[in-house]
Amino acid sequence: MLGTSPEARLPAWQSVLSGIPSGAYRGRPMRFVRFGFAAVACFGALVLTGCPDKPAATTDAGAPGTTAQAPTTPPPARFSLSYQAPDAGLAEISLAPDEKPAIEATSVLELRSSIGLRNYRVRLFDEAERAMVSDDDVEESDSGLVYRINLPQPLKTGFEYTLVVDAQTGSAFTDSLGREVEELRTTFQIAGEKEKPAPPPPAKKRKK
Image 1 (tube, helix red, strand yellow):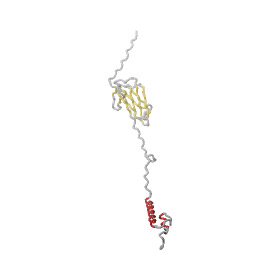
Image 2 (spheres, one colour):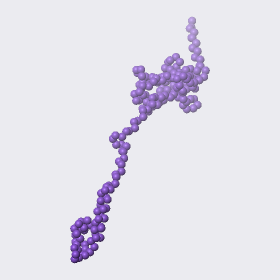
Image 3 (cartoon, helix red, strand yellow):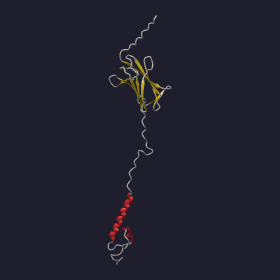
Image 4 (cartoon, one colour):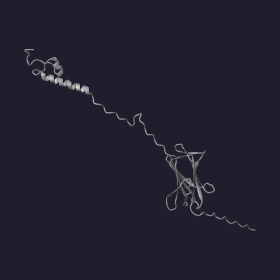
């Protein structure tokens, strides 16, 4: 290589590594050789490291296969009974099976249930097991029942009365979900002394 001019062309392998066509530069070939090696080293490092990891896919709450929370089933039917107090609003009547609560004389009773009812009837009986005559108002929905008993006269003091909720037809009634409901039978007493029955009208004397 004696006698070669410093302005000789770059060899072909140097021009490939540097990305510069052979013969395009003259004067200092070693500088371009170093640049070519640096480019190859950077490219190799990128290949070895690869692409950054993708973030983990999040589970879609509405995607198929996810477990949805089942709707809660309402508890069995519960009843509450109230009466219209003379000097106040509605007062509750205990429905405990071993109790016979005493209430004030009233002409309005209100029965409520915690869920809608099907095939039911509501009746009020006196001590002689006779059904009381009343004008009733009913509000029905799947979420509950409101049944108002409007009596033509206040219930008599000292007497006992029994409220019964049972089946209208057949032997059982159900709630709005089709579950059988236990019959309700509760007795209460009107506070005060027992009213004496009115004396019978005097017999008419026959004319001779």
